[in-house]
Each structure stands twice: as C-alpha cells, then as structure tokens.
Picture (cartoon, rainbow, N blue to C red):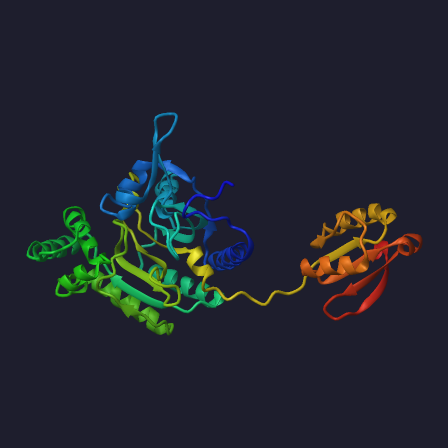
Length: 402
C-alpha cells in the first residue's frame, strides 16, 4: 500500500470540513476589510526566499524543499506566503502604480522539518498583505481583522506585540546586542550562527538555556527612536480603545528577517508546544529588497491545521434533498428530477431501486432535509410526496411543482 509522505496529510473528512469553514469565514471578513484574493505559484525561484526570508532563518537554512529542475533552474516549494505575494506585487508593477493594495491568500506551504502535533511538512495558511500604507493604523487594522476572525471561529487566544524598530534605530541596538552576545558564553550553535548573520534572531531562540543567558540582554523597546516609539504607543492606544487585551513581549522578533517596527503573534494555550496560531508585522523594506520601488508593507499568516484543533464548528443543519426510486421503472424519472433540482439545491440520490427504509438511511447519512421517493404509484399520477425530515411534515406535489 502506498501511504502519504511523512508529515503530509490528505485534506478530507473532518479536517476538510474545518478547512472549508475557516477559509470561507476568513475570506468573508477579509473582503469586508477591503482585501482581494491572490494566488501565487507553489514553485518559485529559491533566490526569492533567500533574499526575503533571510539566510539566517531556519526556513532557508534547514527547511526548504529545494531542487534543480529539468531546465537547470534552482527552485523550491514555497515555505511561506508573503515573499511570493511581494514578488507578484512587483511583477504586476503595482509598486510603480502607487496607491494602496490589499491581498489575501490561502493554500499549502512546505517545510522539511520534524513532524509533530501542530507542525507538518505540508501545511496550509491563510494570510493577508497590505502594500503602500505607512500608517500604524494599518497595523492595528490587521490585528483587529485577525481578532474578528478568531472571534467568529470561536477561538480563544493571547495577543503578544512588540516593536522591532526601523532602519534608523535598529543599527545602534544591533551593536549593543552584539556587544552583549560577545560577552555571553554557552549559546547554542544556532545562536552562534545568528549572531553573525542577524543578531536580533538570537532573542527568538527556543532553547531554555539560551533564554536564561539572554534574560539581561538589552531590550528593543529601550532603543527605539522617537518615531518608532510614537508608532508603538499609538498601536497600543488603538488596541486599548477597542478593548483588545495584549501583552508586550520584548523578545518577540518573529522567525523571518524582513520584519521591522510592529511584530505580533496570536497564541493559544490549547494545542501544545506549537502554540502560535497566527503572526505577522510590518516589512517596509521588503519590496525594495526584491528590486521593487520602496513600498511600505504589513501582513499576517495563520496556520489552518492549528486552527482546526481549536475551531468551534456550528451545529450541522440538515440541508438539501434526497430523491430515491422505489422501482426500476422509476429510475429514469428520478434521474431527470435530480438533474433539474440540482440547478437550485443540493440533491443526493442512489442509482438503484431501494426500499423506503434503505433510502431513509441514505438520506440520513447525507444529512438531507427533504426526502422524496418515487414508485409506480407516483409514476402513474405524476406526483410525489415531499417529507421534511426535521419537522416530519409531508405534502403532495406535482412533478413540475418541485
């Protein structure tokens, strides 16, 4: 028997229902906030992610599905969504047109990492990106949109926020941090590597020993310039005004190199060690890094597999029709009625004559609300009995009245 690859699962059954429910609700909310759908290719040039996500990230360093294709191109399967959307933004010359663009996306991402609960090698994300809006109000709007999505999905969470500074105040902070790290002994191998490539990522280390060594490290918030400090205070003020509870986590830096200023994560305590269910922030230089014209950007992504363990599904309601044949002679008429009725409603059927008991069992399995069976008497009279399986009410209709 051929099984799916390790860390990759079929989207079917209960997860399929939850996936559809999450995407449909989040899509509706995103559209209400002015976002339009975008879909980027699963395969991209490897260079795209090396230049955007960053050489210091675990994604680029360890996790990408990277290979040389038959045209000798260095390609990889997308490990995250933002870089591809930024590339598409530049490809379509939106960076030259100016103005504000807002996109949302959903689909599979790929990372070669150790599978565990909440972490797969093929996983699905729903994300959104805004381009051309420099105001911190857009950062707040993104967070408020995410909050609305989780509220609709019935998911409880904790919100953590931080400011990573900008390209005015970050260099000085980086120097202060490197001086501290140079005096710190015992950091793990990943931290030693990050110290040389992107020192701020050291703060993101999940190694408990490293975290104990970093407890006295200089804090980002103590090194912000006046502009970044004012933006962060405004962000907190907006969240306070909408009664959004949050925690300021001075070591929250996110796992990607392109963030600046606002960074945030939504955390759930109900899914184990992999507890981040959404995260994002601002990336005002990323379009420029990828050879586009300087354009502000901010966005988020959330993992649908992790949400599936938390989402509160609504009670399933009976819907649609079940139409069955009681005799071989009735099969042709049933087939015609099914085809016609499917133009307006969901219709279930069996392509063989069965007893009423068998048809009722099939209708129950299909969760149909209305039940119709046609036999020799119905053929003769060109009538049918329509039964509501919830209220148990029945009424007789002519075929053309259905």
